[in-house]
Image: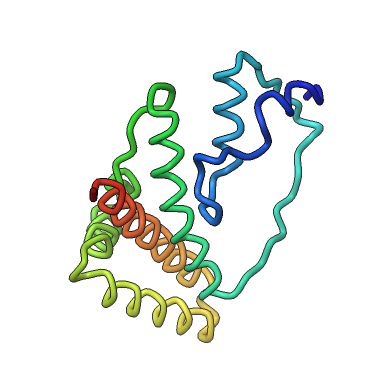
Length: 157
């Protein structure tokens, strides 16, 4: 990327909340809007080795949900509107039901507690496949719940 393009577009948007995730997507969409075209280069691949405790992953998921709302809000003409229920779309109806329940005000805390406990227990028992699946479900549930809350917050006067 040429320096003058980066300066013209701006590396950060003042329209994007500070702690929300997906600022990279926002930047890419602003580049697209400014007429820049990305080029795929497989040699630029990276390995993501970021590890974090479960509670930190849950906190990140909250900000990811919030960020999705803002990315779609700022760029809905390009990527369309965001619907939190899209995060509930999973491989099985059972997982979808858990995410939908976790999105609700009533179901959120019990779902988070059950998934957190189940994930930790699976890890202690050496059932890492179950631990990963439960953690992914917890992440989706948190993203969806906080995306829904952010949409409600933005609608308030």
